[in-house]
Structures are given as structure tokens and as C-alpha cells.
Image (spheres, rainbow, N blue to C red):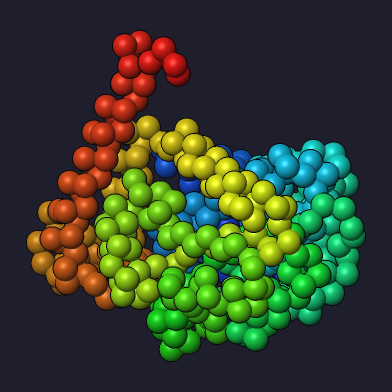
Length: 385
Ligand SMILES: C[S@@+](CC[C@H](N)C(=O)[O-])C[C@H]1O[C@@H](n2cnc3c(N)ncnc32)[C@H](O)[C@@H]1O
């Protein structure tokens, strides 16, 4: 069937179709009151693609935008240190990170994707001499041959490893650090239990199921897993609640409890290879990298009102739309179905939790407002600052 005029109908299924899942959620948070990650190109792609985004993926949620925001931040930090470096995006889908980061002229930006996705990227994304797409599986490792000497590469695999066979994930990490001991790797994970649920068939909405995720790993196992593949590497593991506690206050509290953290927390993982510069090995540069994250986190934290709007909105859409006024578990569940919640369990306690989280969101909002007022008040600026 021909594409409707001006719009493209992608024929994707399985893992490649999930690129639309990520695009939909990122684009929703790219502008307007929920803006977390300004990205006009992503919003434009959603308009140009003929696909039932909302029916398949439900109401927008912030996690993909947060993941992308963290990826951008780490790539920018890497490019500050290596202005002519090489960025490799494994499983890039229709990620528009290249245009958000807008790297310098000496940078090589390589995306490794399956052939049908590379074909789609060529139809939809602007060309640029700094970037190159390699068609093939990231698991085949041929992309490693395309990397030349010079600066150690920054490799990102966002939303990819869970769709690979566990042995493929291990082979990629082992081969990357064997070949480039000073490389940096950024990837994300889902817990084993969540991956197992997708293998049994996890409905995201009534119209769409998440593809099976062969690989999952629990929070507390990640550092040991990486150490077994790249001895001497430095691994930082963060939950989304660590990255944006203002957005997921309940998740932040839950992540303090080890078994809950392992059971429910998808993670963002940053690995610096065993050959990182000596000052990194002592921890100084690494700390600088993470503290720069902490600094930008404060700078990029939304204003109080926006933080409240996003946390309330994400609470409603992620946890089944149960507001503090939803009085019963069946009512919460029905509302969950209407908004297309991924959470098929957990709605029984949602009413009580919603109340607690809403109060926590209000507290955070109030404290961020106080902080902002203090930081703008002349009396709060000490002579040494
Ligand atoms: C959830 S999407 C993530 C896309 C992108 N990273 C983002 O965040 O928007 C997963 C992507 O992994 C790609 N993928 C799956 N298996 C792959 C493989 N073996 N090699 C390369 N890419 C793969 C899919 O085509 C899809 O684009």
C-alpha cells in the first residue's frame, strides 16, 4: 500500500518496531509543558510517520526522554575531553541525538543498525558529513573494524541490549574493551523479572505487546557482570530515580530497598574501560564526570511548577491513572486500561501510594521553589561564591 501523501508508513515488527516506541515517548517530552528534552526533529518525525503511536504505546511517559537526556549529557562530557572523538550508537533507531548534541566538525558519529532500519533512517533523517550509518547487527562486531585509532570511542547502546541474546551482550562488552581498553560504554538494562514477563507476552496496551527481551539483569548484579567481562573497568549504575528523584520520588524510596531495587528498577549504566587515563583510575576524572552530571542535573531540573506537572502526569500515566481521588482498585484498573498503562499489577495499592507520592511531589516542588528563591536572593550569595 502506498504511503499517504507526505507521510511514511514503516513496515517494522519485533525489536525494530520498538524504535517507534522510544521515538513516541521522546517526542512527547520534546516541547510544551512536559518538555524534558528539546527535540524538534523527533516531534517532526512523529508527524511524518503514519503509525498508531498512541494506540500502540499508550500515553506518553518520561523514561525514554530521561534516558536520552543522560546519554546526551555523557556524550557532551566525552566530546569536551575528545573534541575529535568517535561516538558509536548501537541500535540507534530513529534517535535524533546527533542533532541535539550537534558535535564539532572533527567528530565521527557512527550508527549501527539493522538494514531495514538503516533504510528508514536514510528516508527520514538529514544527511551530514560527520555521520555514517553501518547496516548490520551490532552483535556481529564488524563495526569495531570501522573504528580507527585516535581517541578511545564513546559507545552508546540505549534500548538495545535487552533485545539481544545474553551471549551477544557479553561478546560486545568483552570485544569493545579488549580492542579499546580506554573506551566508554553507556547502556541501559531491565530487571530479569521484567525481561521474563516480556517473554511470556507483556501487553503494553490492548493493541500492542512488547517484543520478547532475552536479556535482563538486576541492579545489584550489573557491576559484577561488567567486571567479569572487562576486569578493571569502572562501572556506575544508576536507577532512573537516582537520575531524576523529583520525577520518581516513590521509585527513589523503593530503590533504597535492595530486593525492590532488583525487582523493579531499570538502570542506566556507564562503564569506563580498564585503560582509562591514570587520573581516572584514581577516581578523580571519573568523579569529575559524575559531578558534572550532578551540576547539570540541578541546572536542568525543571522549575517547581513543571516538576510538579511532570511528576503528577507520569504518576497518572505510569501507575494506572489512579489519582488520590480514585477510590477503588477496580476503578484504578479500569482507568489504567483507558490510559494504556503498562502496569497490569500493582493497582490494588495505587490509591494509597498516589496520595503519598502526590504529597512527596508537592514537598519536592516546595523545596525546589525555596531553593530557587534562596539562590536568587542577594543575601543568600556568600562572599566566597
Ligand atoms: C528500543 S529501540 C532503541 C532505539 C534508540 N536507541 C532510541 O533510544 O530511540 C531498539 C533498537 O535496537 C535495534 N536493534 C535490535 N537488534 C539489533 C541488532 N542486533 N543490531 C543493531 N540494532 C539492533 C532495533 O532496530 C531498534 O531500532
